[in-house]
View 1 (cartoon, helix red, strand yellow):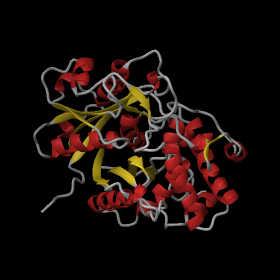
View 2 (cartoon, one colour):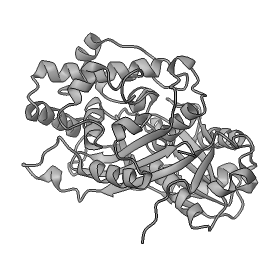
View 3 (cartoon, rainbow, N blue to C red):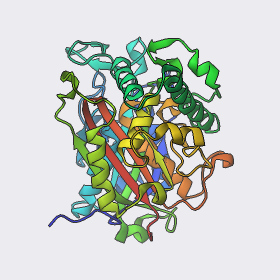
Length: 405
């Protein structure tokens, strides 16, 4: 019988590179910044690492885990490269945790990174023929803003929102994200905006305007992990305020929804399924009441709205009411994207899953960089990542928490 991962694995150190348009750096710099902070935070030497999992989506500048061995000069240890689109950061933590739970290794490193800005154009990119990178507008994929715009208009129609109501709801989500990001010293876009600015911004794909879309960027995130039973042995810096893995959920949809004219864009089956898996492992019955915060994959404002509903944190069709009431704000019932989210913090594809987990890690330890955004009584946190487009998703969910809860 399958066993839950709950409380078997601990995260004892985490780190991030500076995120943004890092024209002056390469992937070696990004990985070094994140991993060295994680090693220092954990109080361990990199020579102690037994194995590593690394994740990234864009493979123009790297193709295997060797890039981590080169960067950190790790000598002859297993390094596994994983890729699950925008859920790659969730996969590195899951892979590392399973390696520890199997007792193959004692101390491991999980690192996600991405170098996206050097391709020379905005938006998402995908790898083409060797040595070539091109914008993701191929017919077989469609542009990401267009796919999410379809989800937004379908949502408006299904739940009876006028164009004005729907766009204003999305604008308020973006305003919240920017408010949170403006107070986060590590965020890429630290700028407050107004509802009017969001509603009147240049349209990318109606109803999604400029402020409804996250910015892809360069960055890396890392975590040092061990089995919970070994915390006293390895957790020099955080012997009492480490966090543990409570549950994972991963689900891949078959991907034909986008080809079906009857497809309902307003709920995401992969997110639904992954959430059920993660909540079952974590023993969470009422996520809205039990979670202290949720970092949701808000690549677009509509993605936050539908993602929260699909995870069961908010009933279907009730997201507008939550947005209006402030339920997802810092002082609300369930803070969503307290870090600023992908929208304001930035989105280097392979690193976002690590970064979302690190938000809970810092909040739990009372180390939110700006004390004005520090939450109280933090016990459970959820990190939600999804790769692909509505109708063709891979979703990864990681739940972490206080070790004794």
